[in-house]
Image (cartoon, helix red, strand yellow):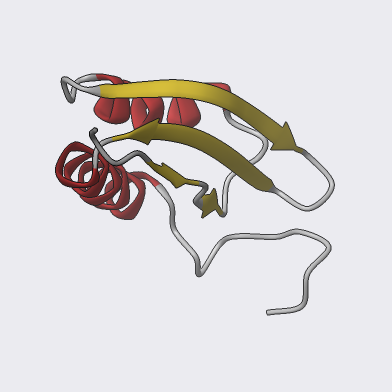
Length: 84
């Protein structure tokens, strides 16, 4: 029986759907990972993405998503309800 893990990262972007689509694209590019949900919150300027799979593909997808988010999100300009 294979192990499944769930990954639910939050990204500091909830107002630009193109940035989130690019991050989701990185996750979906990994074979063996299944997207379950994505939500954007404009007030908090956050997005939550949920995906599952076996441990190695999930780790790869999470890493690729982090790299893409780092390219696209400038935390020095980020504004939202949570204090900085």
